[in-house]
Length: 468
Image (cartoon, rainbow, N blue to C red; front, side):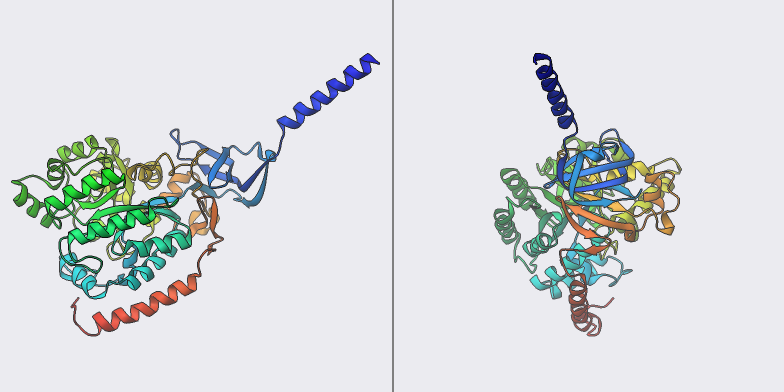
C-alpha cells in the first residue's frame, strides 16, 4: 500500500513538473517563421524566429524552437519575411505634405518661397489635413515613430493619437509672426500649454522646436533651453544647415560657428536634437558629443538643396547619437525613411571615395536604434528586446525587387521600397495589416488632401501671388 501511494505521489509530481515546464503562455500577438533583425547590442538575427507581444510590450524574441509555448489572440505567419523594429523618422514637418512638389528648384527656397507660402496658407485645418496624409504615408512606409517640427502641433497630436503612431512633436518658435504665434514669447506660451496637455500621453512627447539659431534671438534660445530642462522635454532645431545661418551667427557671436555659438550661450544639453548638421568640423562634432546631443541626418533633403553632405559617417564612427530623418515633404519630397537608405549608403561611399564606407547594417542601425538614441528613447524603442515597447514592422521578401535575399541588411538598403512594408505594429497594436491601415480611412485622408490642394492651386499657383 505504501509503495503504491509513493509511486502515485511520484507520478503526480512528475506530471506537475512536466506541465509547468511546458505551460502555455497567452500573448496578444505572435509573429512567427520570421527573419528577425533584433537590432540589439549584438545585432542578433534569428532566421526562423518569433516575436511575442503582450499588452504594449515585447514579451519574447526567440529562435522559434519554443513556439509551442505560446497561444496568441492574433498570429502573423511571416513565412520568412523580415521582421524588425519600426523605423524612426528623426526629423520632419509632416503637415507640409499638402505643399509637396511646389517650387522644387527655386534658389534660396526657404526664404523666397516657403516662408511666404506658409504666411498665406498655414492654418489649423491645413496642419491637420497635411499631418493626416503624412501619417498614412509614413505608416505605410514602416515608420512607427517620428519627430516633427511645425505649427499648431496640438492638431498634429490629434492625428497621431487617432492613427495610433508614436511621435515627438515640437511647436515651432521663430522671430517673426506666424499663424500660431505673433511673437517668440507667444510661441513659448503656446508650447508650454501643449506640454501641459500632452505631458502624460503614452505615445506623444511634446517638445520645443525653435526654428534655428539665426531665426531666434540669443535670449529666446536660452529661455527655451532652461524651460526644456525644467519640464524635461526635448528641444528640436535646425542647426549648422546653411551659409546664411553661418553668416548671421558669425556676425552675432564674433566669428563662432552655429554649434560653437549654441554651446557658448548654454543652449546645448541632452534634451537637444539637431537636424541636418551639414556645416560641422571636428571641433563642432566634439561639442555635440560632449553635450550628448542627438543628430538627425537628412540625406535626401540636404543633397536636393545642394547644401552639402553632412559628416554623418564621422559622427556615426565617433559614437554620436545619430539617426535618419526625411525632413519635410517640401524638402526631400517623401516621408519614407526606406527611400533614405539607398542614398545614405551610396553618397557617403562617394564623398569618402570608399566602397566599404557606411555598410548596410550601419544604415539600418541609424534608422532604428540609432534614431532612438538620437531621440534619447533607446530604452523604450529602436530594437526588438524583451520589455521594450512593441513597435514592429514586417517587410515582404517575396516581392520581385526583394528576391533573392542573401543578406537582409543589404536587401533592405539597396533593394527595398516603402511599398514592401506589409504589416506595422505600434505599442502592441496592429495598425496596418497586408498594407491596409486599420485605424483611419485612407481614402478619406487622401480625398481631403486633394481638396485642400485645390485651395493651394487657386490661392498660390493660379493667382501668381507667389512666383515659382
